[in-house]
Image 1: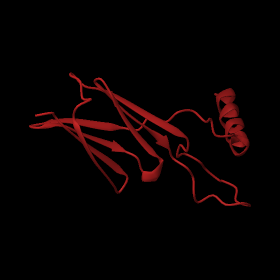
Image 2: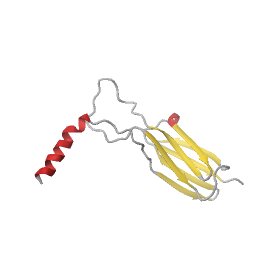
Image 3: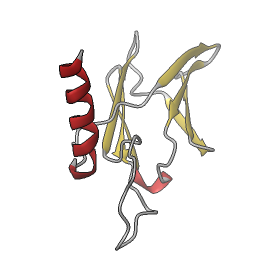
Image 4: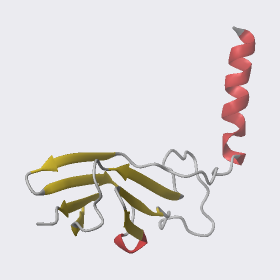
Length: 120
């Protein structure tokens, strides 16, 4: 037990020197099949619409970009960091090709809504 507590406090003590990992972030997504195609909802809180790329190839929808910390200024130091600021990507597979689907999207309140309308 004492060794576990020592490791715990050692970890807490070193947290301020820790550097962000730079690892990819994989946002959560919901996919709904609709009467005319699919609706994809991706949680992208804190991401600027200008930092999002959407790509369709075959039956794959790829969403990529970067969440940046725009509030951090020179001379600031952090006390606690739990939000991942890095590049992200989300790849979603569909049961059929979506290359010819009409793509409509809206970005509001941290949610990217993509409507893929099947070819008529």
